[in-house]
Length: 195
Length: 195
DNA sequence: GCGAACTTTCAAGGATTTTTGAAATTTGTG
DNA sequence: CACAAATTTCAAAAATCCTTGAAAGTTCGC
Image (cartoon, rainbow over all chains, first blue to last red; front, side, top):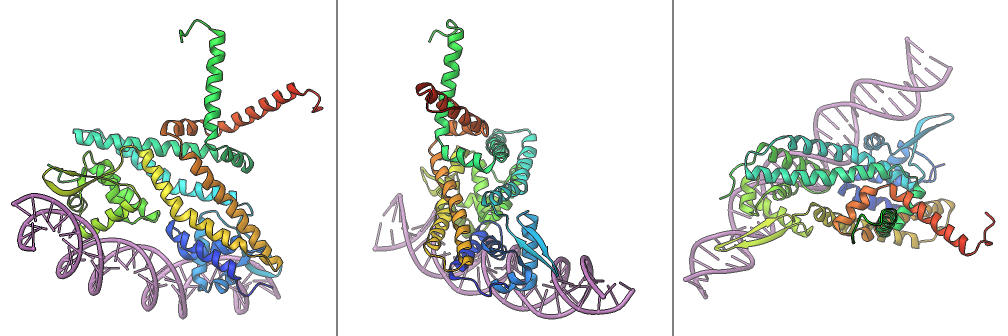
């Protein structure tokens, strides 16, 4: 049997994620539905969601459809029950990875396309040339971040967390590697550089 | 003398960023104002913006106020002209860093606060315990990302780009470092490990 | 301190987005 | 195939967010 009401803590969390969702291009309803699915110990059907969150059935249906388009739901059926039961993936990292990748596909890729198309134009005035330089700079930043994300996304959760824990220390490691390489090169060819 | 109209390319870019802004919790107007300031070779005043984008003067005023609250504008005055002229910072990376940091302060920090307050409650049921476990997992992810960002943010643009170019390769570098360290330890104390 | 040049505020109107109940559609079962 | 159970669609109502002109507020030079 399902729980009939939400605990105070659960409600606080759900409410906050509804608000956050609305600042991130996801409607309040969708944010709340996902927050509830995220904390629920067992999968819920659309009626459960409508009842617990006091939304209309159709609103829940629209919200679930949207969440599915973000690939954020798992669903299953139960014996002797024709209703579909939904849940969020167990692993929070997986959820965030999916979310980030979907935003990348929906927003970053189209933005890169627009920038690239704009950059095909050639400048006829100094003013126009400045505009193209600015677009190029933005293109380079977004393109690089996009590539970086695609690369990073391949890592397992464990590798990703160890890399994040390293943080800016990685920079020092990189410098150390470069020093080591140039040292090894100078050992091989002691006369190449007069430094 | 100011340019009277926007080129086709400029308009395309501005329009696209207005749309993107509206998907990211920034209104269309604010997105367009910032896009125009970003590509403009010279600073613009509020009247220029209202005229070029065909917004009302008051709408521009509200938009500029919002952009200032995001710390995204530089402003200056000209001799013999009492109007304030605005521009975006030259460096795109600086712009994105500021944007990310402001979102972190406005959205991530409050979310961590809510999660921490929820986690102070103690579970009285198995159901409640599951909820707390889920909140803890989300807290840990967000907290770690937040720390990572604060750490990364200190890097110069050059260091940051070289780190991004390294991407997931950094992971291999990290593993190499660990192997090197454990090798050096085993050299010091050959009998500690039987491996 | 006055007036002109700018800027901001505000309440009203407009536009867009959300939410809903009712109707239509789909799906599984006998 | 016909039904009942569940889901989705849709047009309208509700809520929210944007935009504006007019009025109030600031700031500067005289």
